[in-house]
Every structure is written in C-alpha cells, then in structure tokens.
Length: 230
Image (cartoon, rainbow, N blue to C red; front, side, top):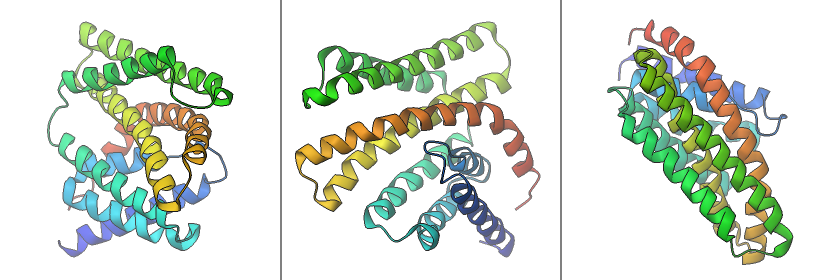
C-alpha cells in the first residue's frame, strides 16, 4: 500500500473512533456501521480490512481492553469489510436482498409463534422483539419490491439493497455477541439467556438506526469517498 492509502485508512479509523465515542452515551444509536460500510464499499476489501482491524483494536484505548468485545469486533467487522468490499465492486443481485430479508422474517415469525426454550419470565418480551424484527424485515422487503417493480433506477435500488444487507448484518452482530460473550466470560445457561433477552432491546434500536442512517447517508458519504483518489 502507498502512503496515501495508509493515510486514508488512518483518518477513517480516527473518524470511526470519534463517531463511536460521541454516540456511546446514546444506547442503540451509532454511525459506525454506515461510515465503515461506505468506506469498504468504495475502497474495497484490503483497505476495509486494515481499517476494520485497526478500529477494533485502537478503540480499546478509550473503551477498555475487554477480551469478548475485541474478539467480537475482530470477527464481525472484518467479515463486514469483506462483504461490503466485495459488494462495492458489483451490483448487489436482487435475490441476495430478497433471500436475507425473507430468511430473517421467516425465522422471526417461526420462533415468535413456536416460542424459544427460555424462562417464562422472558417469553413475552422475546416474542414482542421477534415480531418487531419480523415487521422491520417485511417493511424492507416490501420497499425493495416496490422499487424494483417501479424501476426507479440504479440509485434507488442500490440504496435499498445496501440498506437491507446492512440491517441483517446489524441483527447478526447482536446474535454473534450473544454467543461470544457468554462463552468467553463463562456464563451459565440461565445467565446467557438473560444476556440474550437484554440484548434484544438494543438490537431493535440499532437495526432501526442502521436502516435510517444507511438509507439517508449512503449516497452522500460514498460520493465524498469517491473523490478521494488512492
């Protein structure tokens, strides 16, 4: 990598940390997803991986060196960088967005109806959250379908596709955390279930935040990034 690419990655890492620190006091609200998404989408996999890894490690200076969080960030954001780095080089096929949203909607509805093997104390809250995820997925699916039918041009369909994939990724971030944190910290099964239930409220807020921020900021941020020649 040349010096300019390194400088671009370094500035981006600093901005990501600043964004996370600034909004860290507002639960569920973050702009790291849309900023890193746009960066990887524009500059590709290699620069995305460097930025994602550097961010995952250097943020610890401000937020503490928690092993479970470091592992979560290194796994999730590097996979995130690869995904959107690849998608940025080609048009996202419609079937990917349809499949992801359909799977999330179907899984949420299924578990909301059949229930999860958890304490009765948590069942009502979990059911409500699952129906919320189902509703969000269905709204995204309908919106994307309408854009395709009306053929609103590449711009509208691109934003809808990226937003749909980003929303699913945000849900996966919480679910991955629900696995990694209990394993590393040695939670009992009961404590792990409690952690899972507690995470659902934040997951809904983060997913809505991702949908709104990506839908509104994707094009402006990508346009700015494309003016940076590396």
